[in-house]
Length: 205
Ligand code: GRF
Image (cartoon, rainbow, N blue to C red; front, side, top):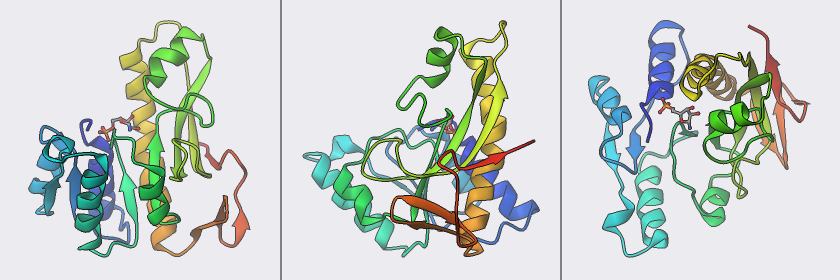
């Protein structure tokens, strides 16, 4: 739904950093999503599954699941997918669906995180990659990266700084999964057989 910059970071990491995976398809719920253009430029199949074309959310999610399953993916990455999927839908893919969220979860779940962080005069902000579960923005954290908040920051300047970290931690989480190092066991994320801290792996860059 956004600019597709996280998708681009994944595609770039595949091309230039030997990220050991391939993007099978890009699915968007909005035809305007620029990620679709980025996928087309990379010769990756795209699908638009728009809620407006369906009787209800259930029919939409059935169509989405059918499309996903036609590719038999090992991992589903929600990168800027700004649609709240039902608990039943996410449960279907538990352990093989991850999400990136622009806050230090569990702080600032939901939308407009940068505006809320500024309003709360936080000094630290960041992004989190987590396993998606039936509860929104609440699955076990995998990786977090922090950014400082400056007095001069606007939501846009903060979003830009957070996105730079997103573009590092999302490909890294995907790399760990592709290498068989990252797994979800129960409500916990494990890396190399050891449980990750509840905050996830804190990336220092
Ligand atoms: C990012 O902050 C992402 O975390 C959120 O949407 C924003 C835009 O992402 N879900 P992208 O540029 O569309 O990848």
